[in-house]
Image (cartoon, rainbow, N blue to C red; front, side, top):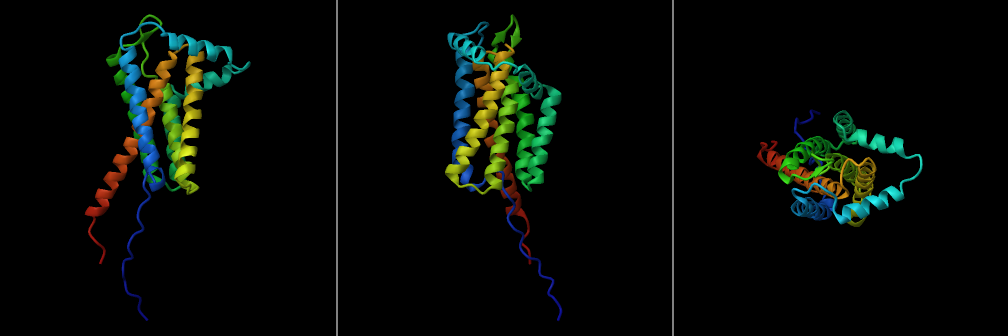
Length: 229
């Protein structure tokens, strides 16, 4: 018997944002917008630490573990151009290895976008540290928080977690990643603590928006594809 050459319908492509995470990630994007914009408006043009910055820095320095300098320097290096490029490549390859192509594209595009956006926002906000260095938002914090958020999305997808568990995993990994980077930047006196809040917000905003746009583009492309006979 001859087999009919019937083309089977393709399985739907995996999206960057699974249905279980769309609502919580949308909420994170709105939170990110607030965390990015509100401090920018409050501290625009400042050249010194606020009371909040002073108190937060004192707390961080007082509770810094002994022997943590190498970790601090390592976290800072990951936010530098070479380290950030390797971070982008590593997260993207991890997504590809797990078969999450849309999420891999999201990782590459969002981390690159965050680097450009953080650099562009600095002169617009005009906040300075150490007598002249533009500092808001923290690009280091933004990049590493974005990478952590992508990892959270990947874990939630791979393990097919439901909405509540997905939210907990994504939020937990993102907060840990962002907090570690903020801790390093504050210890190095490279940024005011509120600069790292702006970087955190930048990542929370850009990653979900990028993922949503990639999913929309993929959906439109699939809709315009000729139907199989």
